[in-house]
Amino acid sequence: MLFGVLTVAGVFWLKSRLTTHEFTVDTSTQQFIIGNDVLEIPLNLLRFASQRKKNVLNRADLVMYWVDGTGFLEVNRRTFLTPDGTQDLIFLTLSQRTVNAEMSLRLKPIYSKLLSGPPQQGPADLTLRKFTTGSGYDGEELAISAGGDPPWVARCQRDDQLASPTCMRDFFVGSGLIARYRFSRTLLPYWKEVEMLVSRKLSHIVATNK
Image 1 (cartoon, rainbow, N blue to C red):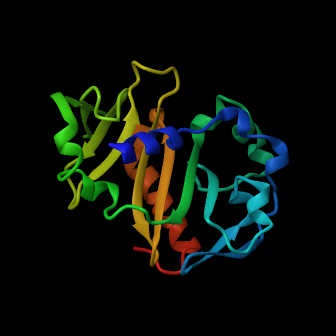
Image 2 (spheres, rainbow, N blue to C red; image 1 turned 180 degrees about the vertical axis):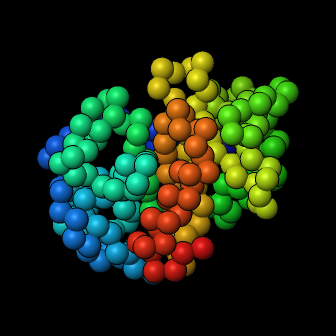
């Protein structure tokens, strides 16, 4: 369960760290390398100024406006820099893979053994399942859409635990990367649109996208 505990600790963003000096309105694209993957990233998508100064990265932290996938601009400054605005942002991290399977493929061998209680109906044809107390995912539940093969799966903070709960999902991309994206639970009814937006954005960033 150590993996679960460590992942929980790193999943959810700190609003106080979104500060003006970290962002740029520069929309030009720069090449970065993570492992064996080459990335072409618009600079205003990168969350941290320190990452824009390097060509070789351990990870790339991106932030985008969820509706259209744009990065930081003067016209959306308020969305990026106010606590309420972050509910309309998607936080995306690209790093080298450290797990053997992406989240959807972890449902049956791992997550299904850690669930308790009856399934609950969620928004947009999703099923919600709570994690067993002590599983390493306390205060979270799993959002599942069984319509695909493999199913769409996201881990969400329960809305009875926090005022601003979030969800996280990951999948493999490129030759050796894992993409983890985090979004406000208020966007869960639009999970299909969020997934399509992230996948489309990655298809322009990563040389070979799944």
